[in-house]
Length: 116
Image (spheres, helix red, strand yellow):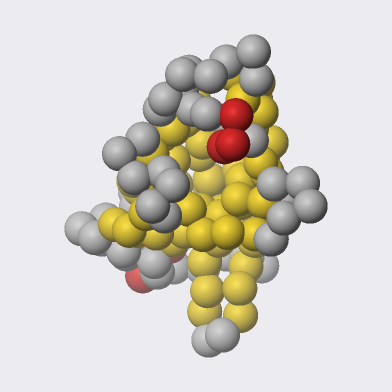
């Protein structure tokens, strides 16, 4: 079955960095676009970044452009989110995602807290 397992979250001060990882299994990882979403308390889950199956194309939410970088290693079935210059408004649970035939698959999420 499909599994998406995120890691790398934690508590960081404003201006700091974190790298999130998501290890995928149960599907042909290299064939699919992958995305990171985030959900802050009391808010909807929002798209943060997407990467094409080969990694050649990426897209970002305006709020993270220039600060976050999505990447992938198809040999390791892993997608990453490098987050730099973190701000308190980046505090959220971050989820790895892919979609197939109209079905969205999610990991369990990893908490990122940006606070001094």
